[in-house]
Amino acid sequence: MRRVEYAALTLLMSAPMTHVVTESCIKCKYTDCVDVCPVDCFREGPNMLVIEPDECIDCAVCIPECPVNAIYAEEDVPEDQRRFIALNVELSQTWPSITRMKPHPEDADEWKDVRDKLKYLDRGK
Ligand code: SF4
Ligand code: F3S
View 1: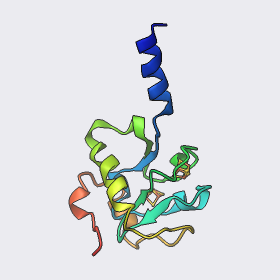
View 2: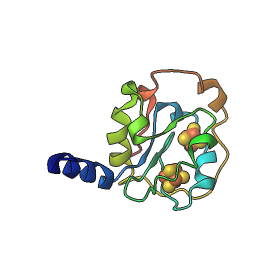
View 3: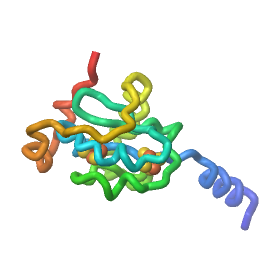
């Protein structure tokens, strides 16, 4: 392998990755994901959770727990959800930690199939 290719590969493999909560979580916030995270890296906003990227160890156990498939590995985030990568970074800096599952909003099931929910995101104060 040429030296430049090796350097690029090394850089790629050492780049920190994370998992990302996307739009489906908004107004659903089922919180099943929280109970399985081994490093407590979920953060809670008024109507959505996000993941603190520096704490996530990329174990992926939260992915199948979410009833609305809101969680992706960063490299698998769909094109129309890429903005949530930056939103997880931003919002996890100010939202508080959540470490236990809690009851979801009463109307969560009514929102689970709704698309384009970003306009409903409540960032809190
Ligand atoms: Fe937590 Fe693992 Fe999910 Fe990261 S991938 S948020 S460490 S459960
Ligand atoms: Fe949201 Fe799914 Fe967790 S809806 S709170 S990412 S279980």
